Every structure is written in structure tokens, then in C-alpha cells.
Length: 466
Image (tube, rainbow, N blue to C red; front, side, top):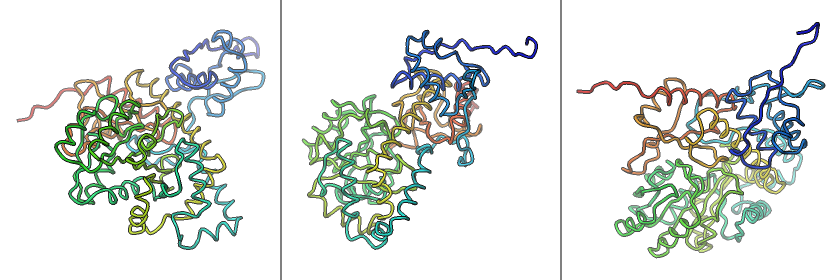
């Protein structure tokens, strides 16, 4: 300090942008967030002047300006007029909404624009008496005509140009699974699944008296040779698959593997249920199974992952020949999907708010994945960067049950691979981490720090058992 003037030290920070995706300004903002979470940039430090950083990175000043502005909107930095841009640290976005601060066992959308979207939509519907009145009686069909058209238009934009008689609106993804099994199976039939699969398929099979059999997977998904052998042994009725961000392995099946499995299903006359509930950046998805084999595949999805769990709206796409049976099953289970919920979701689809939300989700999850990589170290986690979950194979001698128990003792809840095992399928020593569940990146960083400590410490000495 000289007189009354403080000398502000400028942080010499030149990030590596190669681990991040997207436009350069977004990659720079992502790198800044990871540096803050990892402690490389500490609260109160001043970032390099924009022109200086631009010169060092070989980008334009405008790129750095946009990156700093994006980081400021995320609550990571603050710009002080005449002084520069300073690190604030990770901000608690909504800790009061987090009932279990260090829970990482449930895949759910982090909350951002959803509250404002819901508030605006409800206000708009309240000021539209005719639209509101149309949603109040028992629906005569599966959604109002204008609602169905909005869904069809949105599906076309997703690369799924389907006809009206192929669309069944449902009360979420689990409802879609149950309806598909009711239509395709008889009690006692065998349903083939990935060896580790969403627990909801087990529940649906058990409730309908079906036998679920888990098959071997590799890093591309279900192994075709395992499917061929199972077809010979069980004469199955249905194959259930999650080709995009498979739950829990977080794998996305490449096109060649999709085509190989569909060819086997055609040869053995097996129906395919394609579960596309898990959120991922829409631009990164390979062709849907239903697009490759529309007469063989029933595809289901839900907006509960894209928006929030309380929005129980989903859909099933099926061959037209199954239309009437699916609708009868729907009527037998819930009679009809709420037109009020359908109205809200269909309006978000029509005006582009759902697309904007998906972009926000993809960006937020890339931030969280970069944070996880910064805390745990690169290369440990498996899964696409915009997905809600990450798969963590555990180093020896950790066992998944011991690791999860140790994490729970320190306040972090995880999901074991065993939780997803179908039948007697042998579960690997791995855990699934929900990077989306903590209400803020600060809480996520806290949970990840606990896991890092456990990985570094190891399981300790085992007790002898007589």
C-alpha cells in the first residue's frame, strides 16, 4: 500500500480450453468456472484484463468480453467499474430447495428457468378464459387437438416426423413403460434388458408377471452376441433399451450397434421399447431406434427430466396398428392425461421455451461436469458432458457397497451398480453420481470433495470374519 492507494494484484491465468466444448466464449467461461471450483482462482482475485487474456489465448477481445459476461451471469465473477473483473466464488443458487444437501442419488433437472416458466404460463392461462375452460372437462380424446398438434410439430423438429395415430400422450415415462408392456406382453413372457438398467423396468415387469433378464454390455451398450444367445434360450417377447445415455452406465450407443441389435430383433420377431427419458443435449443424439425401425419399435420419453418431476407428461410413439390397444390400456390405468398439464407443456413447446430450457440444462450440466473433472481429476468419470449422471468405476480395492456406505457416513448419498442389476446380473464395482441433483454447484463441489477424499484414502483395513 502506498499512501491511500491499494495495489491490486492481477492474476496470471491462461486456461487450457481444449477439455471444454462449444463456442470459444462458452469454453472460456466453462474453464473459468472449473478454475474457481478447483481453487485455481480464489475469491477476490482479479482476472486478467480482457485484451491481455485475448492476446495470450489468440482470440478476440469480444470473445473474452462475452465469456466474462457469461461468468458474471452465472454468479462466478463481478465487474467493478474502473477496477476490473473479480472472482466471487461459486454462488449458492437455491440452497433452501435442497432437502438433502449432499444427495447425488437421484437424476433430476437442476432448477433454473423452470420457476419463471411455470409462473408465466399459469398467469397466461389464467387470463385466457376460453383456453382454461377447454382444459377443465374430462377430455374426449388423448389431449385436445391443438395440444396434440403442438406435440407433433415439436417432434418433427426433433427429427421424429410421425403421424397423429402414432402419438400417445402419457403421465410420464414410467406410465409409458407400463402401457407398452401391457400391450406387447402376456403374463409369463420374457423381457430382455441391459444387464444394468433403470429400476422402473423391473417394477413394471414384476407388477405384470413378466420375467426380466439382464444381458451383457460393453462400452457401446448391449452386446449383440448376448442378445442372439438370449433369443435362442428364452424366446423373448420384448427388448427394453436405453440407447441414449443409458441409465446407469451413461453410455450412448453408436449407430452401428443400434442397427445390429435391430436386425436381430427383426430376425427373431421381438418388439423393442426405446426409453429416451434421460436428458442429453439434443444435438448429440444419434438416430432414434424408432426412426430406424418404425414398425418394430415403441419409443417413450417424458418431460419430467427436461422440466421437473412434478410435470407428469410423456409420450409413446408406436406403429399405428397398436393405437387402439394403447389407448384402451391408458383409459384402464388413468382414464386420461390431465389437459391442464398438457396445455402448459404444449405451450412451452410451441413458443420455444422448452428448447431454451434444454439449452440452459445442457450448459449447466457442462459446467457441473467440468467442476467434477476439476475436483476428482480428468478421466475418472464416464458419460456425456451434458447428461445428468456420471458413471464412476471404482479403483481397487474399493467395493461399491463399502464406498457408498463410507460416502453416506460423510453425508453423501450415491447409487450402486447393484441397484440397477436385472435379475442375477453381476454388478461391477462402480457407482452412479447424479451431478444434477445438488441444488447448487457449491453443494456439488462439497459432495465431490468428500468423494475425492475417499478415493485418495482408500477403504482402509478389512475386519477378519470367522
